[in-house]
Amino acid sequence: MIGQDASPSLSALDGIWRLVEALAWDEHGAPLPPPYGVRTFGTVQIQNGRMLAVLCNGDADISNGRPREYVSYGGPCQFYGEVFETQVELSARADWLGGVQRREAALQGDRLVLRPPLRDYGGIVQRRELIWERVWRPAHV
Image (cartoon, rainbow, N blue to C red):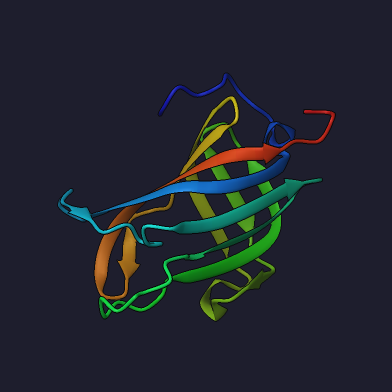
């Protein structure tokens, strides 16, 4: 894991985070275009044991033939130091409702790296890495 803080608790993640970079590789490790475009947009709010996330392609022109990526979901969450887990109560994806979303997690100060499991995105099996930067923190963090 990337420079991880020792055993952080869920409250260490409290705040508002913005997506600063999204990377993707195919199942063989070859780099793919940024999944949320060149102008990546994303925000996550984590507080009081709950999270709400929205991510989308922020590019004005997506004439490359690929659909505009968008995902949003939220619900109660847990942080186990190397794993961030959300019990999905609301989602733009019906297949996520009632399920659990797990991400490998690495926290270093106000940077958070989340890695979803290897999965199919639009017919291409991918590994992704989402790099977040905290833009607001409550006084207790």
